[in-house]
Image (cartoon, rainbow, N blue to C red):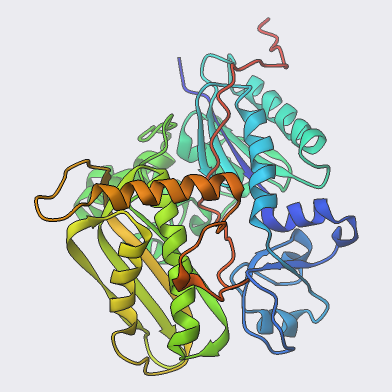
Length: 420
């Protein structure tokens, strides 16, 4: 039986959630910021823009100063991660009622394997329309989702990318050629300008040309990525819907500094807070890290910092902070800082291996106990002295690639397909 895959992508998600929460923002250009600038020409960037903002040329990732030049009336809102997570939990709770195979791809995207739950793509399209309706009723009337439906994961994602906002697009063998001819090659998932340039050198300028190009030639020129490109546009499934999320390769946090300074007394507590949040996530997943990276962006130049592998794994916040502090602040900064970042890598499952020379288990138990207290009484209910004075610096953040667990509920489809 052919696979039936549905991909759902929430439209302008963070901004739409803000508009849902505040009706006065609806229908207006809204930009969600990591933090609001304190001056007219303050620093910062737009991390999400509403549909209305995109129509006037304001894109995600644009600097606030540039956005105001394009549209002085842009409404700026500071992001509230808890609000987005709560909304995503509602949406993923709906998705989990239609299949037991849901892959959260990001905080606003998911793949659903509907094979066996529906008989064909047309029934999946009706199911997708029902999901869209339920989201507006149960999560918020201002929230819209684009849905792509196909026999493979890649084509379903491609379909939601080019579908009308709030609409559905079904890609089947009998209409794929027509759909491919209506879009640019760079609109396809995974084909950016550098890849498009490599394909152009082979004489491939459209998706249909890629579809009919000899796969042996692509393999000879581009290697394995060439085969993946050819297989994706030809409807050959390579990945499938993942039922369990992939283990992270790294865990980290960063913070753009609203107060531009090179003072260690201001920057070190922020670094400590970022290390605490990194450590909390590391311990929550029962992992330890064998490497660390710390970086500080500066006004002029490429920034300072570095990364290194460690002889013994990191698990506790003090150990993470000690290593990050040595990488960044062992010498004075050469210029004013613009951002601070820390991440740990080389992640492996937590080991209970003891040391002959030092007690490593007690600090681990203390760290887990402090995490349990903060889980119960609120973030930073107990905090290290190194974080003193951070206040609202380095607040909670949520990225698009962060996911929310799908509630483990027995799928109970409310839409009963007509198999006649």
